[in-house]
Image (cartoon, rainbow, N blue to C red; front, side):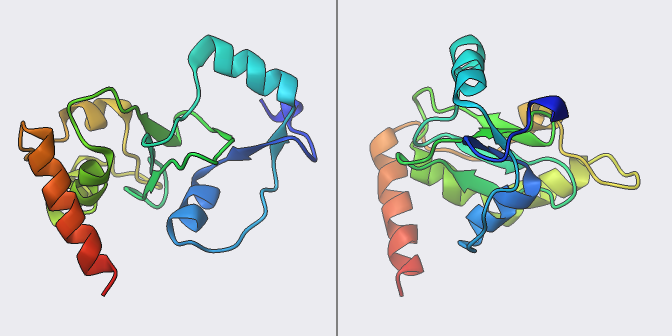
Length: 151
């Protein structure tokens, strides 16, 4: 709630901040919540952990940020979708899949067309991608793709 916003504390990210994180652009968060509120929310709902993903669901659609170990923030529900890692899919493999034309085209195709496009939780639940069932194979693919990024 806007009444809970502070001038310092735990950063509270919206799509704007997510896009900056994805693009490795420097920014300073404009909105914070108190440590107490963060603890309360985290206890009740959890919070993004290393390897989880946040995806922009309003405005600039389909921007995917992979949460790092050092990150401590909360985010605006509804505008940002949270993909939790719970086994079966290697985080770095998912990262590359999510940036593929196959998934990005689904996101744009599923987005509600109105003044501002949206990618909803319901859309996310039906987004499909190809994935080897063996995690070691996923790791090999992700490693290969990340080595191409370094070139």
